Image 1 (cartoon, helix red, strand yellow):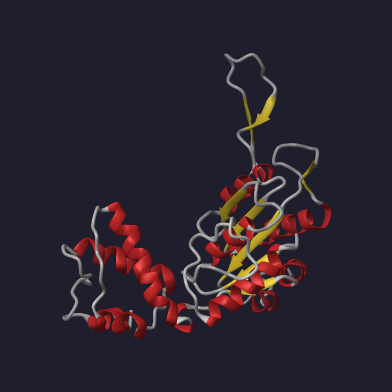
Image 2: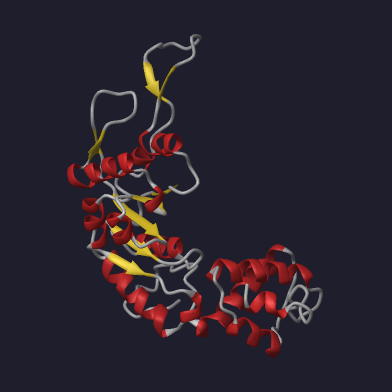
Length: 271
């Protein structure tokens, strides 16, 4: 995607499209990138929230520092806490030291001076939300198993597909953390609100998966493209990507063929 005001040397990878909705979102993202505040990215599953977060990072002042991703929705509370704050274990007896030390580094250590990206932050338990709020307010955290606090400089980016204000009302999300995040919030439009981008995305995925399978697919039939552009896409870009990957696998010639095309069109349109 080419956006006015972004230096030519800056890579905006994975942001594919030229629709008015996407342009509005990216112009807002450019303004957010110029700041150094926490960021909340809101959007439906599969709409491209992580790609937008990485794009913001690439054009920010922290672009040469790390971008550390932690998923809040696929981990238990204990696993998530260990990922964020680290844990302690003893060095094996045959080594030179028997002093306690943490195994590896916490995600917060790794993200120091860079970005800590929390995917689906609404899934984080309340006690971890409180720790994250403390980091935003005081710039320090207490690693698990250690009595001292560690200073850390991170920019927090978080995504959600939920209404965090409603989560606050249901006592599932801390109001103070919501207020800190919502000061710099950006909405990613669902694919059905940027249908003009579907042909660009479809050909982008054809090239991507065609290279992997050594196929040179050149064309999408008009009937297939109409089907793609009219579909509802509840899974958004991710759903389109999966479908194109399957279609590339089914295609032998230069023209894209959808799996079961002609017998199961409703599956694509109403999936």
